[in-house]
Every structure is written in C-alpha cells, then in structure tokens.
Length: 364
Image (cartoon, rainbow, N blue to C red; front, side):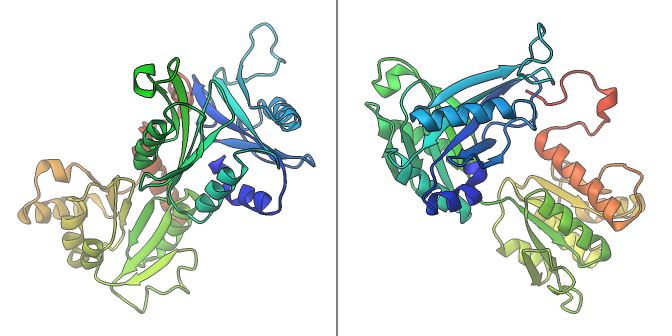
C-alpha cells in the first residue's frame, strides 16, 4: 500500500475507511511488480492498479468484501485456457494479491496511518504483514525500531527481517523458518519498502540536459543538474530539476551523497570537465555512468582516463557514447535513448525489440 502513500495518507487524515489490494507475488509475464496497489474507499472511489486493467474489476470486488467484513483476503489470478473471458491475466502470468481493510475499528489503523505519512514525506519505512494469518501490521524504521504487531511469538525477530529488506530497498516475500521465530510453523512475511527516490545527477547545462531532466523525473528520479557555469545553470532554464547546483562537477561529486541506485549522466562534452569528473564517477559504486560524445571523443577520453590511472575494470563501466541506438537526433529523442539505456542497465534488459525476442515480455 506504500505504492499509493501520497493519496492514502490523505484518505487516512480525512478519516476514510478503505481497503488496499497489494501485489505480493508474480510469476511468468505480469504487468505490475510486487508492491503495486489498488485501493477502494467506503464510497467506492478507487485509486491505483494491480494489473494494468486485466483483473481490476475482480480486485475491486475483493476490496469491497474485505472492507465489509474486516478480514484480509489473499487471492491469485492467472489466465484460464478453458475460458478466455474468465477473470485472469491475458498476458499468461499469475499475480497474487493480498487485501487489507483499514477501518475505523482496525487495530492496525494507527500503524498504517503513520507508515503512509512517512512514505508520503519521502522518508524510508517498511510495512510488514503475514500472508498466512492475522490482520496485524508492523511499521519498521531504518534504525530498527518498530511499532504495531503481527501477533506472533517473535514480532521483534520478524521486524528485524523487515529491516533487512528495508536496508536493501526490497519489496517482496520472504519465508521465515519456524526455528527462527518460535511460531508453530514457517511464516511467509511480505515486506513493502519505501525509500527516497534514486538520484540522477546530470552534469552539463546544455540543450540535451533539459530534456534528460524531464525524462529523469518521468522515471521517478530525484534529479540534480550541475554545471560550473552559473550563467547557464539556473532554475529558470531547468525548472523540472529538483536541484540546480553551480559547482565544478568533480568537486560536487566528491562531496555529494551517492549510492548503488544513483545514475550519473555526463553531458559536459568538454575534457576539462569530463576527465576529472569521470575519474571520480568510475570509482564510485553507482548504478550507471554515461558520457556524451562521438566515438572519436570516447577514444580520446579513454586514453586520458588510462593516463589518469583508471584500469580496464573501471573503464568497462563507462557507457559511452551514451544511450541506446534509436536513431534519434533531437534533444528529446536523445534523452529518451539515455533513459531507455538506464532502465535496461538497472533492470537487466537487453535493449532489443520485443518483437524479435522470445520468452515472456515481463521477466519473472
């Protein structure tokens, strides 16, 4: 339900009663990942999606039922060969949803409201539940403190499991053995993790940067534009950026916070900026480093970076020329090609047309 934190936090503040269906597992080809949610309030208003439209009607009815009787529901949907018009996923996959009612008399309402408020503010938080019994929920913070209850003999241990998932930014299920919990049997824990958006840092206040900033926002990144030239790096030129920083790129990158989800896009196209910046970038454990330039520029850049002491392993991380070959020319087309390459790198995609690739569209 943290997938809909901003909207549901408003519902909770207004005192609305609602039920939330959350995707807890998928197999085969399925359009939405674990954590995707659909919510229905007592007046019938609906927000979100669990399948891109395939089973929304059936899930809507599950939410109404759960809200009426106050009991969680776990249900799977898949394609039926016997009846192509039966409720199911036409793409051939299987999606499992878990529906949680949040009523005025729900023991977990306060926990849900707090978790939604934290996630809506962009703070890291995890929300954990058992899929095989009970209506309890536990909110877990990055420091390991938790609130709420699952109703087991080892809620603290299960909260620690949820914290481990939060540390990784993972949303999904984990089976916790009976030997670790003191429960009567193994338990299946579903953990939703909400972490601040990953960072995209765009270096170079050039024409292409404005389009890339917009693509970065579309992909859900917190986007920073950095350039040493204050006359070009202005909020007026890049209104969609979350931050516009006037600083030498390598100096800024040394001092700012990055992590394994950060993507770095070097559009400066000037060796006096590129080389010191890439010396830093290629030694950081970030998700993606791409640099704009022709193949001739790229070859010259590699020579300079080798002279600066970078080895083959570090240089192999550099995506240059940046982007996928889409045949584009305009800043917008180039930005789309860069965004597509970033998605492929982060998700393990091949970048080839789906029409020519076998197997499921959505990797399981």
